[in-house]
Image (cartoon, rainbow, N blue to C red; front, top):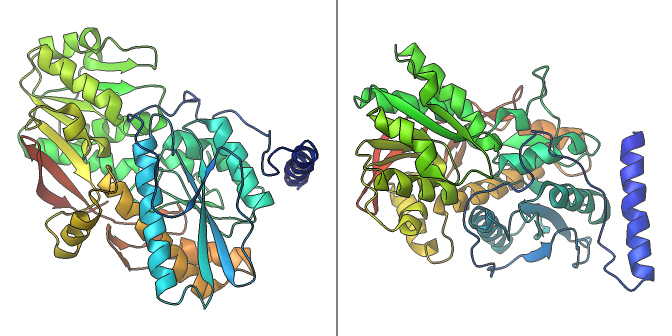
Length: 424
């Protein structure tokens, strides 16, 4: 309670101080360190255009829009809108805003208009914590559409314990939702399969398709990359395959000579290289592997989905990746056709859309007066038919239970869905 009162006092004091100086009354100066130990810049995709359809975009902690009126419900959207993972954040924001617009066109939430305000974390953990505190103490948002980036979610998870605002996010590192004792952070939720499920699916798919020898290149300073390492290796081991430790290569933000990092793996003549990395790094890694003459497969996480193919620019036929959506599904393909000119990371659009639709259902059932009731309703979502699949939450972990995903490759640069996998 003392931490909460202190944070509120600091936020309000800064608000009055900035107003007195003629500054922005929404700016705070409270921060924290990255709880995951990962580097402060979440690292990843190339910065994209920041122009948006709908939604107020707030840079850092600068809150420039009024709080919701009596006939409105204000929700926050905490995303990387500028910076190296902006393609992810912009896509989530756009999907979330489209869901807001659709909800309002159909009568709102219990007759109230839904209003979404976006806070730009800039891919920085201090910016993210400041923005989070502003959203929950100054703007009084009812829920937050949380970030897709694990570094950012890890940065706010401890602070979120002092407030009553659910963070409905996408960070798949289980450490973003679970404390060391295995209990859940009360406000942290993930609405896609976690890293354990995704790593297991990718390894199962690789073995099933005859790949027997592996090298690994992962970013040891990034929560996303680290969280996908052991689930993949553990599933291989369960299938009787052990990866030589000398071929498991870690790197950090300062390491950009990917040819040197990859050389021992390529020289070993492995069937496949496992690269759970963000798009910008992944493009550079795949380029380096090609220049070294590697002819095997490269297995990747979600960030080899488009726009990886167009960013890479070459033949992507040796790439395998996991995805949240089936582009062959009629409803999904129709929506992809409508939005592909608006966003680059199409799968993130669908995830943002689903989160807001789930939030609507939960707010209608639980109301907003009782924070515990709203959290409990979110934790117990059951059989929600989303665009990314049927979502049933595990109330103990605050993550989906048994949610499947899809494995893809490319035909040159055209995405090709190969197989659906059920989640464990």
